[in-house]
Amino acid sequence: METSALPSAQPTERCNSCYKDVSAEDAFCQNCGYPLKGTAQEQSNFRVQKDFRDIDHFEFNAEVRKAANSLYYLSAIFVISGLIVYVTNKDSEDAVVTLILNLVLAMIFLALGGYARKKPLACIISGLALYAIVVVLNAIIDPVTIIKGLIMKIIIVGFLIKGLKAALEIEKMKKENQLL
Amino acid sequence: MLRDGPPTKACVQCGHLIDVSGKYCNNCGARQIVGENRTLESNWLLLKQSALFYGIYIFVCAMGKFVDVFNTLSWELFMDGVLCATAVVFFCFNWNTNKKLFRWPNFSIQKLAAYLAVAVAGAFVVHYLVGWLNIAIFSKDEHYFSFAKGHLLASFIVVFYMAVVPAIFEEIGFRGYLLGNLLEIADVRQAVFVSAFLFGIIHLSLFSLFWLIPFALIIGYARIREGTLWYGICFHFCFNLMACLFELL
Image (cartoon, rainbow over all chains, first blue to last red):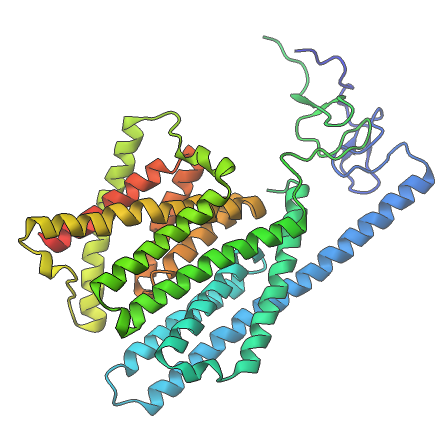
């Protein structure tokens, strides 16, 4: 294979933007695209755009954090409502089963919330789907539950959907940076 | 053959030879994006499409399981028909990209046997664990197909209905359509996890999650590794068949 076109790969300096090794012949950094031999104007443009990307990333992460908090909040709701149902219907045969169901759901939401920072898209989609199923099942068993805490439900789903969009952006950035 | 220097690739824009791991060309500065560059809108659209698919599944499954009116055999058949049709319609929506999943490249009898062996072993473990769990938690032992016991024809119908149909259509829906969509927007691990989790919770049984999710993860990875749905379909069929046999025998 012909490799003579490749510059001798002895790193002599570092990129001013990402601090990875670059060779003297490079016009652009191979890691971040910084114009090593560009004019001062080009270099400052590159920095501004990178700052914008960083700000975007920061904002998307904030949205994801809110969605993760919604998942924690759901977890707490399931613990509390499970306990309430258990205490009020102690004598019923289903009381223990309902309590266990609620606690398992709470644990799943807790785990999804905890993992949402690392794998935002997966955790938020999973959380939304699980919550949708719980809402639909509750509605089928007792239609009144749709209206119960409706505003809270809308707020939670709103945060989750906003988080989902942010997670999509983060995922797209990751794919573009090939950090897979 | 002698090679000096690291492996190289040609820049997508100027053709200059650059390091194979380089993200940007060191000659022209062009970003070296692998694969197609999707826009955020198209990703969001894919996600909404998947949500519609999954919403139909949730609705039909929940109705079928928890509304007494639909608790007859004919309604159940109808519901399953709706689910199968949903899977097929969504799968065929992107037929040109999805059809390659029906190919079976590098068919290997050893691989198939290995997958089937795992399925059989898994079915054994799950059967005894589920029996134990049901008895431990609910103090009851359920048998769904007791009506078919001893009747050969009824047994065949149960096997067809419980093993053949879900194996084909759930694979088309979840590993074919849904996983394919998720792979477009997320990395492999997240996509496989989400498809497995959604597959697990659609069965509407919280206590089955502990084996449904690993089951779906195995099939999801098999689909990615082999690039075909067939290993998954065979795995799924074998697993369900074993479950049926446990109930019928």
